Picture: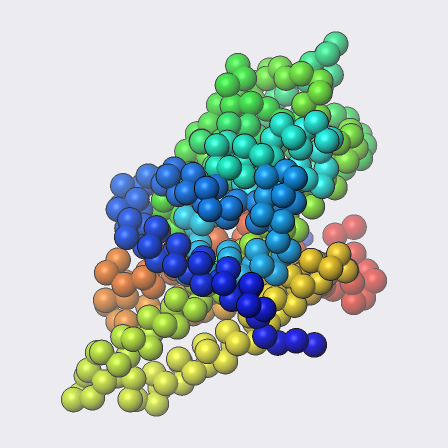
Length: 383
Ligand SMILES: Cc1cc2nc3c(=O)[nH]c(=O)nc-3n(C[C@H](O)[C@H](O)[C@H](O)COP(=O)(O)OP(=O)(O)OC[C@H]3O[C@@H](n4cnc5c(N)ncnc54)[C@H](O)[C@@H]3O)c2cc1C
């Protein structure tokens, strides 16, 4: 057991924190107010090797393990988890899917430009009637001669408006359930493809879209992996996304804690700094205690994943605990700041708006509890 970061991990942590403070913090408010995506951020991240951190160097990635990746994602999310999601989420979700599921030719085609920040690849799994129950998807893919013809709708797709390509989870034969699923790459310039921006409670500098596919025809070779493996292959990416979300939630919580400590020393009421009152100290100390514990759970799950060891329940626990803590920390941080916390003059309002999102994507709290329950009890509540 080793509870210290290596020198290399400390260096990555430090660099990522500096990047967040120097490249994201100065402009995040402007992008959020104007509801704009910061495209330059992805390019800069590509130049610095922050995209595809866990992707092997032969495909353009940085070749680090998942623990290093979690440390970096945590630091970037200190400023904004949702902007981090938009800038590099595709290098977590789509890149993992392609690395673990695509053919050698497809990896060479898609991964190097993605890791350089030149192209964005979104993943469309969720649909109006298929959220947590991904096996219920209805987007239809039909093989007509040498082309897939795709029809359907995808909801809440990250980078859906800016992606060059979307990996679309399709159904080839509804009677087969998840065994009929196929993952197919659709370029955004394919006739019949459309994207429709949606507005959320948070993610103000984001690019969440609903996508439409109307008789979209793409070459047969755009199939990733095999028919019948679409859902399995997608889940590889979703597993990495869960770690990204948990690590990001740590970063948001740390920012809320730091902001509370600073504000509680600066703000005086009744003739004393509010930080001198025991109830304020209780809030700050309790958040710090929970953060210390949850951070190790996230790093532990990352370590198991890096070593290719079973990690489903550990990662589910990390995802539940970290995202719930970010919600709690941001809510308490807003209260510690009083009305000032409800303005954008302090960082806590941003995390308050974004934290709730981390409890939903990558599997809801309830679904992760069912994963842990299934492993402990040997009973699947969903079947
Ligand atoms: C910021 C953001 C980004 C996203 N990006 C993407 C993306 O890039 N690609 C993509 O495909 N999707 C994306 N999503 C969609 C996301 O994956 C889904 O929102 C998520 O899987 C949950 O599905 P749902 O919203 O339809 O909720 P539902 O599945 O309808 O769930 C609603 C509620 O019912 C509960 N519930 C459902 N089933 C059970 C059960 N068996 N037992 C107990 N409770 C249950 C859930 O826990 C939840 O509380 C994104 C979502 C967000 C918020």
